[in-house]
Length: 117
Image (tube, rainbow, N blue to C red):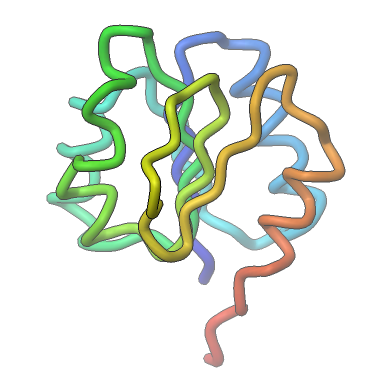
């Protein structure tokens, strides 16, 4: 089963992302969280996720690319916000500035390989 995390402070954006993930991967386990602290707690419990859409408050943006949980426990990270991109962003990290474009979200969701059962 594909696991997707949505960390989003704006409820309507979170709902849109969840609906697009559901259309592209009907069997995906989708977890909607409101901040990075909740994400850390969930990743402690489930271990790893295949894809994460991360939109955070301005005060959390600066350390986003150095966040150890994002680097170690998410297969693909999509930042859905305005952020300063480091000279060499980590592999499998992408930035989709707001407003989030549904076609871009679909592209990221469909890029994840479904696990073989």
